[in-house]
Each structure stands twice: as structure tokens, then as C-alpha cells.
Image (tube, rainbow, N blue to C red):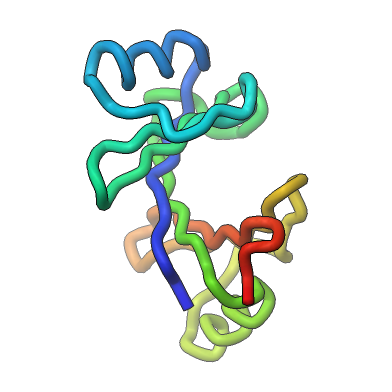
Length: 123
């Protein structure tokens, strides 16, 4: 059901953030979608997603500006239904955001997590 994921970090400047994570910290750039999204690998088990804070209510460096995304292998609607049966409360309907579909929820301490279905990635 859940196959991996990333930690999303909201940033004020994508070029500066990519430079910091790759050239300063030495992480590998996995992919970049212009100034909309970038992924850096912090090792084999952690991907950090960089997201501009200009398109989000989350502002860099503030509470909630880091989120954990969980990639799903099954259709996101099915995963949401399963988790709702297990007591998870989602913050709204599944969001279609171009090549991904997202569903947001919080853990027991109020930390933001989200499910992500990549276009064409489910079985």
C-alpha cells in the first residue's frame, strides 16, 4: 500500500535551495520540474522534496513548513478509504495536481502528512 515517500521542505527560492542541498550539502539532484518542485536524495532511504512557498499557505521556516509525503502503490482513493476505516481523518477530498493526486491528513500530534499517487504509477 505505501511504498516510500519524501519529506517536503517549503523554500523561498528554488535555485538557491537546489544549490544548497546539492552543492553545499552534497546531495544528488533526483529531478527538477522548473521552479515548481525538485527532489534531492539524502541517501538511499530519504528523498527531500523542495517546494516553493509562494504556491502554498506554508511559509519556509515556520511551523508546518516540512511535511512527509507517502507514495502509494494502489489507487489513492482505495488507500484513503482503507485509512478512513482505520480512523484516519483527511483534511478534504483528494486533490488533482497535474501529474499527481494528493490526500492530506495529520498524525496524532498534528503533523501534516500526505499520500501521493503519481500519474500512471499505480497497479
